[in-house]
Length: 279
Image (tube, rainbow, N blue to C red; front, side):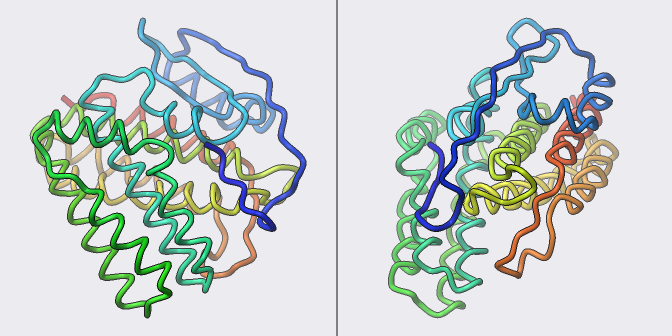
């Protein structure tokens, strides 16, 4: 579902023609992702069923960015990736709240319920994990009530603790965790591409989601780096994620900067490459 709150973006829709290429090697993916012209026509990476890569361009967020992030991955990877994507929505909502945009923040915090929570709740049940919905609802309620910042930040921390607990069933599978991290960074790249047009930010919520997805990815990579078997790869992933900062200006400001979407596409390709050897 594409987020288009009134007054926060341009009214003109973006037109992106679907394009697919199979069998691209990771090294070629990095080279191609750094080309601006390529990034404009290919905003999203998706693992293919038959090996190699499927590059998919959809219009904007939603199916291509969030649901699309887990469309072609295994159930356990999808489980962790969806948890991370939902958490990213809440982190993005918190960023808006800190800027005094309480109504927009509350709206964004409820997007996962409309977009994907039925499936997430089923996956939670399948993994024997507790429902994260109550913690999410508490955060949304605090935002809607325009509670003071410490109260809202405490609600976010409680929600993030619920997500961390829900992820524990897959904590020992490093390959699954690495693949979920990759899916999250790809979703960030797609959301960023969908938030900008003509050098301006047209979709404020998608832009904040992209930034939040990267922040959640950093946290996941930091935790992964604590695992001896994945330490080297995770540290390289963190170095690649640091390059994502170039795509964003000062996120404490309400004026947002639109940079080349190829920046995050290249980051996604690098993260995928460095984590490919995690076992």
